[in-house]
Length: 97
Image 1 (tube, rainbow, N blue to C red):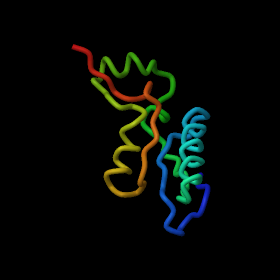
Image 2 (cartoon, rainbow, N blue to C red):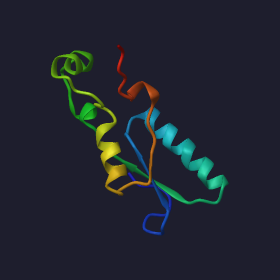
Image 3 (cartoon, rainbow, N blue to C red):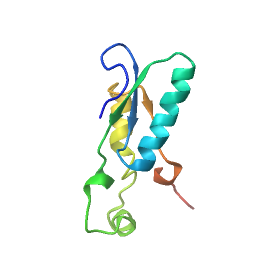
Image 4 (cartoon, helix red, strand yellow):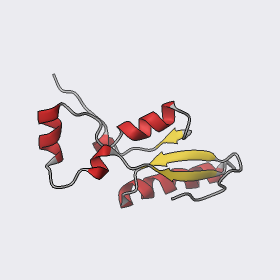
C-alpha cells in the first residue's frame, strides 16, 4: 500500500500493515503534512506477520528470535528503501537482565 505522492521525492514511511500500525503511520504522515513534508506509506510484511499457528512468545523464546515485527522494517531503513520507520513500542525487542 502506498499513499501520498509516490515517486515525487516524498518521505517514505515504513510500517507494518496491521490496523494499529497503519493508524500510527498515518498519524505521523499527518504531522509531516502539517510541516509541509509530503510522505507515502510503504507497508512491509514482517516475519511476525508471516508466522501463523505458532505462539509468537513461544517461538521467540525457543528459537532466540528477536524483532519478529521490526527486523524487515529496520532492514528497509538501513537499505534506504524507506526514510522513516514507525513501530509500536510493544513490537520492539527488549532484553531483561
